[in-house]
Image (cartoon, rainbow, N blue to C red; front, side):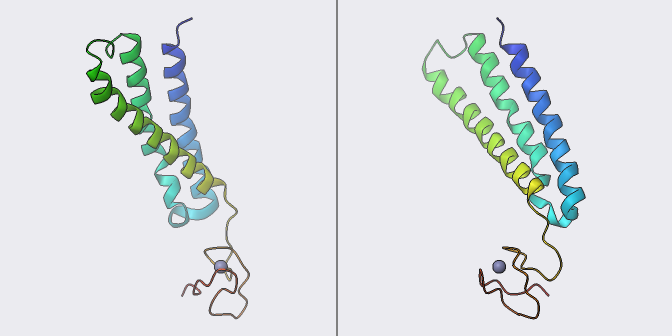
Length: 126
Ligand SMILES: [Zn+2]
């Protein structure tokens, strides 16, 4: 069974999913509240490094000489895994509970008239 087309398809699905996360995040939190979500598509682009790494592996590029594997494969894998992590952060930011006005912007505690959050110590936003 050829894995290449499946990996390419998974990557396309990831790009679409990052755009869906972007729409959900901006809709729930607004553009300012969804800054981490804006990184999602960049993370999806970075995960393309995993597809490139797979193509190189399937073509046998890393076998000869083995040093090529360290010079080429390791940066590709690091970039790809960093892209996956950024997408995870973006989805987490998109799906977090929106914090209403009058609540601590860090932890969501209802501040009422307090100037400083008793839960986490953050000053009330002006
Ligand atoms: Zn707080």
